[in-house]
Length: 69
Image (cartoon, rainbow, N blue to C red; front, side, top):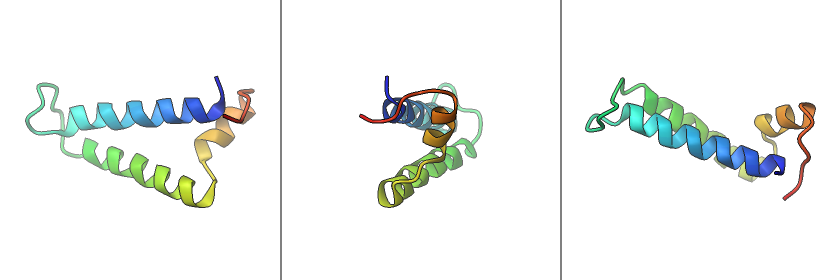
C-alpha cells in the first residue's frame, strides 16, 4: 500500500468518524466540535491538492511507507 493510499484512507476515515460524532441527529452524537475536525481534514486535503505537500505523507515516508500511487 502506497503512502497516498494510506493518506486517503486516514482522511476518509477521519471525516466519516468526525461527521458521525458531530452531526446532531446522529445516534453517536458527542459534540458539534467534531465537525471542526472534518473541516480541518477537508482543508488539508484541498491545500495538499494545490501545493502537493502533505504532512501525513511526510510522516508516513519517515516511518518507511513507500511513496507513489
